[in-house]
Image (tube, rainbow, N blue to C red; front, top):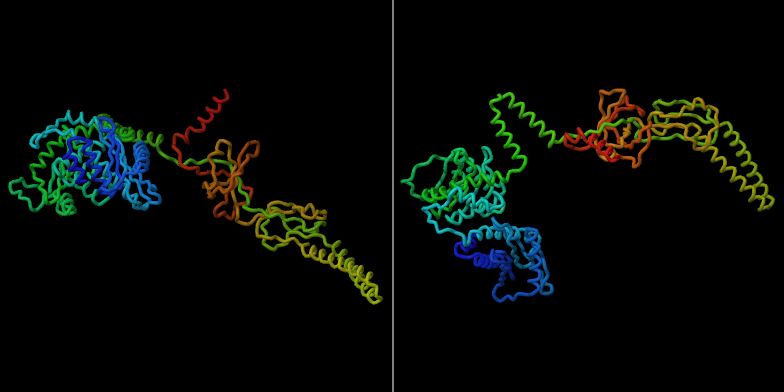
Length: 607
């Protein structure tokens, strides 16, 4: 940056300055090829640079042309790897060149040796910062006045006219800081804009975007706020300076801390005040121990900066956003309403805050829908074989334990079939034995086949007899199946006789109206209160949503289901209640009127 500042001092025209910067930065980055394309008022200026002994290749120019256009259009620096000279890989560093008054005036591209992704990111950030600094320094080349240091040569009117050339406050203070640094040969200049009783560091010379939480920025901000509280210029000089003739100054601990943190450099802060005495900004200066920062130089700098206060105020007001503009208007309106009395002012402020919250705040949107408690999973008990029901031991609503007998099937006919099959097996075995004794192989084989058939029938009958007593597979409640009226009735194999629901494994089934169907999604939490005990709440989370609607009790609804968390002992499947689903954050005004708006839109659509 010192080389760039020196080139700005020595150059008389902008093309001369930027050609010097191109060479300096190309040597700094070790570029094989460097070029820029800038609009400098008299048309487009193009310049190339290659180190001695290096020949420019046409493919470099073609690649650079495309990247220069891309970066100038998007205003964003890039590091782009390219292949040249066959298999040799290199990296193009490309950055836009900015003028604080004219905006983007062009771009510059350097071809360097191949860089890794991490190194390229660091190098392109440095490349962009240096060219931005060059753009700021180049803005002053060819337009400097010949005013002497003893005559500031600035007025409020002239400063406001100059401020009108800048796009925003940050561009103005950046140019002001770099101009001050160049004029007085300072190591660092920082500008902070006053916000109430605090100062925000807006510009730090040598940095593209100062990080407000870094230790260096923090100590400068604290020194600025100390100057704001003191209401006057503060300076801490190096120990080597002879200030016996100077007016002694009070000890300012935050500036002393900055002085120590800067390695003993001289530091100073100058407040920028309007005619009414209010401070709008603070400019802080730092100079190394090797260079003097005399009171005379500080007074000269102060005289140059005082007219800048009006420009800072104008640009700060122009940069205000809607929220800050409304807040400042509220504060000024509150001051004018002071004659009304403090109570009315407080009420008005509360009303305005409530209105602002209603328009811009956030509130949890809860959808209220009817619901029903259902079992999370259901087990059906079917007839084990075709036969009649002999006895039933449970009814709907009973709590049964795993393994408990639920009902018994009539086995009289099975026992009779078992005796007949056993008799058939014995006779077949005797016939087979007799046929083998007589040597009648064919008859023996037929008899053996009948014996096998009888044994298979015996196995089937034994299986049915083992399952004649139907037992509960799980512990749970009997939901349906009144079999006491069906004792003695013959039922086919597989007919559903009873339904069991696992104990304490319950879900809630939501009946979502059409107007809220698009607001409900899986994983949304909610709470349910039943008609049995409306004072108790039970949490749930939606796990599934039916894709199509159903008509229940004359209403078209979409069904959703979610497991209940920690179901109470008294909860039973079939209980009904009301569920509230949390559907995210919405503006309060939207929650209040969106259904009315949707209804009106639907009615207008019918016209």
